[in-house]
Image 1 (cartoon, protein in one colour):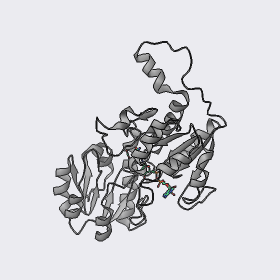
Image 2 (cartoon, protein in one colour):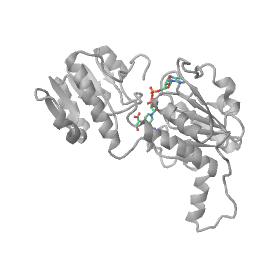
Image 3 (cartoon, helix red, strand yellow):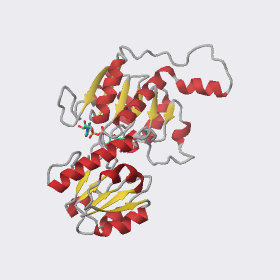
Length: 312
Ligand SMILES: NC(=O)C1=CN([C@@H]2O[C@H](COP(=O)(O)OP(=O)(O)OC[C@H]3O[C@@H](n4cnc5c(N)ncnc54)[C@H](O)[C@@H]3O)[C@@H](O)[C@H]2O)C=CC1
Ligand SMILES: O=C(O)C(=O)CO
């Protein structure tokens, strides 16, 4: 059995790999593309070493399991994997803590207008009044996408006294269903996006949704940039009714230097940095891969198997 694995994870994986597994370590997409031709297993990540759709198309017929550290699968050619009959396991949970902490950072930065405080510091200006005076306690948040990340955001915001409502696809465990949240948008001070980018969620926040939000409410996006209609967001930000937006991912990435969102009023952009966390992320990813490898070899069910039709 042959596996193509990322060299970056080699120190964590190699000591624990079974001796009869033949391994090639990729350091670049070009490496992966060659190595994958006769692999049974491939761990591929779309960034920073972007593996192209072409690579997965060119993989040999033996490729049965593709593993990734990514939770969001929107950049993966799911149709190619589906037509090959290959299993894709994702990285849901691996960086959920780091991302949830960024969402809370976004809410706190918006409440206290940390961006304005830091701009004043850059000017060596001593502010006489706080630019943001919102106390989180007794405010209300809706977290659209209440999965691994969304639930952690919910727990953390609840600890600040925020009343949290979650949205899931199924509406299970007291969450709202995707057809119910729009009618209630006007109730929330914080609208947090933590759902996967799929056909159902692309541009889910557009003109109508922004208009329905409570005056002064903030939009916090830690999911994917294409879930927001940027033209509508720019108009809402310029109109001043929206409190503002905290955007971790954007569409496209990197955001071009001349993109109007950079200079839009009341907009903070964190450059899709939220998922980065010291070494813990790789330790969790390696541990998950090794558990799944044992299951794959034993013909047992693996963890984090993506639903290729659903898209996450
Ligand atoms: N900014 C970053 O660095 C990161 C962003 N992400 C993004 O966050 C997304 C969520 O990640 P996880 O929580 O780990 O995934 P997850 O699979 O644990 O949770 C997804 C949640 O979204 C819900 N959902 C699905 N379709 C929905 C819809 N149409 N409307 C409302 N809710 C819907 C699901 O029911 C589930 O509760 C990922 O798909 C990825 O795009 C993930 C990791 C890092
Ligand atoms: O895991 C993901 O989907 C990410 O966006 C990581 O940054």
